[in-house]
Image (tube, rainbow, N blue to C red; front, side):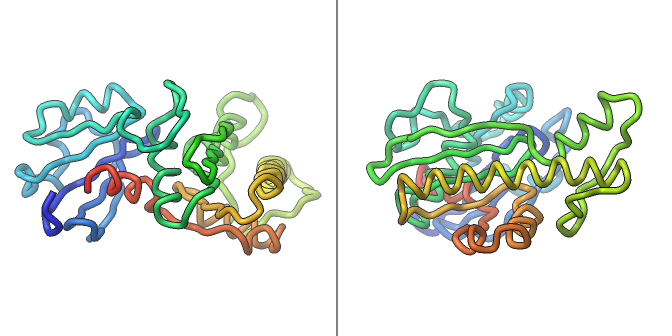
Length: 241
């Protein structure tokens, strides 16, 4: 691709559509939109029909809506230049850890704080070490509100909640947030034990609030964590250019 060629990136996540507009290797803008029932419901593309669209997705029903886009190019796991990837690894995780490695160096550990909270690590030889998946912060809160009779729906607090709560909403906040933070600390420390010089990069929709919590609870750990919302698109850029 020409270094000044305009192209679009679209990552279809579990909850939203994530967009980026590049000129060559330079990111011009990034934005999110809600899922659509018809592709023509996306007004941001009205003037972009001649621009190549590089698409990665974890939602097949949404992927199908873009098959008739004039110049769509679906990114698959086989295109990711990392070694020892397993066939069911999510393309979002693969692109994010590729983006982290290419931007910050290998080895690297990516924590993606989206609908799911995922950990994905790659070593200095660009081989997948492995990872883990659990429900994200908001999904845990929503599950308690929707799947229990007596527990309320709770939103994420803007600051680290009190640990020893004296109300039911605060108890839910405490249970979810402190458990996730303890898990993150455990995974990060285990990773650094194996890869002491490795970068740890936090991405995803809840990255900012989670990094804020981490800085309050475990400042020494947080000092070694980088926040970057665009990791998937840095991974796409490696594939495109």
